[in-house]
Image 1: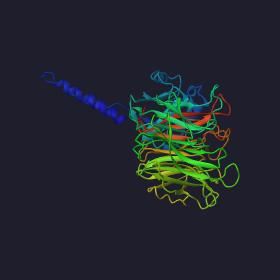
Image 2 (image 1 turned 30 degrees about the vertical axis):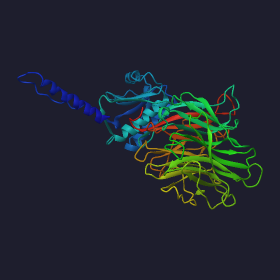
Image 3 (image 1 turned 90 degrees about the vertical axis):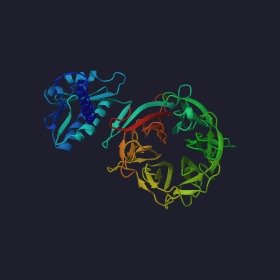
Length: 549
């Protein structure tokens, strides 16, 4: 931003002699280019000031500036309420009675409740915002975007420096310069007074990008355990409003279709299925779950009507009738390397592997290859499950999955550069931070090229660090293809100990139409109908400083 300002000043200064050349003057006055006005602020001379009525949350936000100055510059800068200080050099945070704070607040945009502004006013630095959450983002920007550039504890900015931004619901600015904003939260489907029996989990969403004039349309589905079909919901205004437009029935005798759906839009023609065909993979079963089929349905009218395409795999076993379970569960579709791949959990060889992760591939969506193992562990008590796969920016593929049988059901991942060779005996690596934070159960991942040289990996799950004390599971992100992980806030909150099906397998979808946009869906408690859940949507935007909306 400073460089852009200098360029603008220089450009303006260059226009002065050009205009003078148009005048016929015998002795034109000499033209000088004024040096850009800059403020050099020795942070050791500053006091951090907040309003007398500041909440505990604001004081906590303020202390982050104090801690940053201590850790980066070894400065013990005081942080005090405004009535305790009347210094010339102050960092004003939030609403104070100082004239500079009042003037900055008046400059905030009036069309959003989540705007913030950082500006230089004489020898004072002013941070104001329309809400505590926005102030938190302003402080994060100040710490990571400005203080990190200070040399020897001297912050140099244009004398008229000002930066204003806003966001939808929340924003988080990470130390590597990546900002994750929540632009929208809406309810896709849920219990109402009229429809009070809805029991939802396993949320999934796609944005059409291979369907011509329908590009940008959103389709969503979930498990609806009170309904014996998959319900299809559609939005044509980017998630603001939704309607239920179709149902997918089993279309097989004595089978029920409402478990573990997966939506997918074909990016190119596969066999007789044209580009833009919408697929739904699901686990269908008979009444006592002694038979399960992994099936594929198609729609060519944007989710209204559906036809059975193929059975990927089938199993006969036992579930709630005793004995070893030998079912098929949790499909995931991916088109890669000229094939349509279906990944899923397989119990058919339960004597050797309580459960293993496998895949089959197809060049036409109808005929499927033999089963190929992805994760099949030697310990029969280990149950890898709920696999999702994404292609990374370097061409490799990364898979995430839970390990039932381990304490807290941790989430693991592995990477391959060959979809035909996952080294199935390798358990992979656990997703956890250097501080030991981790997530467990029902994971889902995505990768977007936004957010840095290696893009951004996002993983969600059901719980954090094995806790079930009403804490919302945070999301986890990696900016180096899984070498390291950090935690970020979850925009769709829930209480994990109230009902196990809260946040049971959330979902992501990365937009191909808008860089950095990620659709995140989850099933969370309905505040109006106890014991039931809504399927909610949050639209995330991942960018670097100054990018995005």
